[in-house]
Image 1 (cartoon, one colour):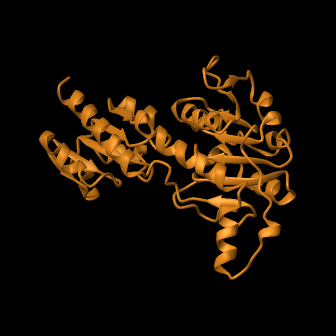
Image 2 (cartoon, helix red, strand yellow):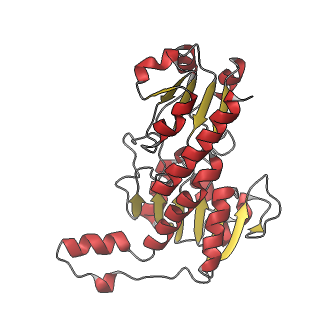
Amino acid sequence: MLILLSDAFDPGLPEKLAKYGEVTDDKGRVADCEVVLIRSKTKVTKEYIDAAPNLKLVIRGGVGLDNVDLVYAKEKGIIVHNTAAASSIAVAELAFALMIAMPNHVTKGDASMKKGEWIKKQLKRTELYKKTLGILGMGRIGTEIGLRAKAFGMNVIAYDPFVHHHNVAEMKKDIKDVLPESDYISLNMPLTDDTKGIISKDTLAMCKDGAYIVNTGRGKCVVEEDVVAALESGKLAGYGNDVWYSDPPENSPLVNAPNVIAIPHIGASTKENLLRIGDIIDQLIGEYVNK
């Protein structure tokens, strides 16, 4: 069995998986592979699948599967898994880091000091304490973010069409019930037909003036131009973003927009998470081999 590592994983993973067969990172051998391991960069499209006639198992090291043609994979009898349980803490910590950095002007303060400026009076901080966090998408990652918000003394509300009761957040029946109450909004939704562009000029108009948004979910859940307009008008006080329309982004207006902290999709890229992903991949391949 040939296992193809199509994206970057923990360096120790090939040795861990060698017991199952040959492990390679040579993408030119895709036609021969039975198992392909991907993260966000590789797109397992219809064309990709057609070029891999021996492919039987795809494992995405991460949560979202929008870079896999799930319908065509199913037609071809290809099993597709993600490693959702691994990434929750890593992504939640980055989301919270962005949530802390924006109202404390961490990036502005750092940049000004390095320019030899002293802008203490211009940087007016606000606290997370007693503010309301609205979480859109209350799965594993949303739950971890909510737990951290509670530790900071925040009020946590959330919307998720598949979650009606939660011990961390007060669940709301509609996104319209979350946005007007939220000082901070965390986007943790998968990309679907229903969530694509869900943050647009219409939903942004529902937000509190001066709200902050953190997106560690999926880039295409927002209309970038509408977010930029909200930042420029002051409707949004800040936007922390780790996810983009493409990796890397191509001419995204968010990169140079005011009050944006832009991160190059590193939410799942902790050393600890890569080790957890490797353990789950090992388990999934073992189950596949022994089925």
